[in-house]
Image 1 (cartoon, rainbow, N blue to C red):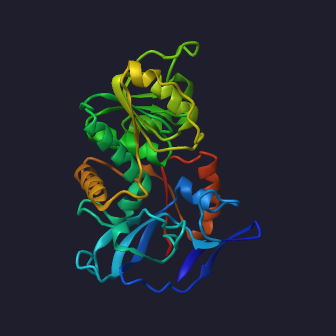
Image 2: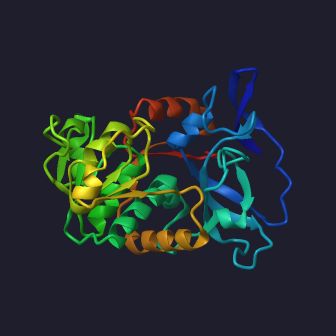
Length: 328
């Protein structure tokens, strides 16, 4: 099968499309014919040297994919089932979705709701799964319909889907971005307001800024997350999933002890089956109110992945990049 393989030997990185043999399945693995995979920030990290996340010297990249089950011993994953494949060490510590086929343990597979095609599943992808998990976490902490919700990194994968899903579920997303020229596109996705990165908070000379946000979805991390924390309203929550800016968080306890704010960590890697089912069910319930097509930045082949990684690293994408492993 054709696959995009990342190899590092003595610090030298090589990324190429090769014909490789399928790895023999473990008894608990299922085999999926891949229709689409998506490009994530984590994929760009895997295809770097040295890599902070890659666990093997040689691996087929791709932390998510969607397609149809062709081999399975799990009665709940019958042959022909349409699934999303993501999580665990996929594309990091075991071969991933940048290939014509992918094998994975059954708990990495999520049957798709009837309202979501395999293409839509990869427009959603790990990024959209993270976005919906963030929304559900905020709802569990009292988020009310019609509330203004800040979304940072709003033109990226998680951010753009978060804006779209929030609008579809009756909220008022406020999109924060460093790409001012994308304001019209973000308004089309449902943003009620588009602001710059430096407009999240105010009063830098004080410990806390003006209490502006009832809730936020942060895809950036670093100083951006710190600015959100100091500008949340009393009892407000931020769902944090990103570290594009930095993995460091320098803050104080004041937002937590004087405004009772909540910092909610969102993980899409080791989410248990119950969480996967809940998130994909919510995505399926929301899908009828969403046009996923405008969220596609572009569709590429395996050979075009290196250029896509550069776009991801430079934050120059708008939405999701889809990978078709068998074009034409």
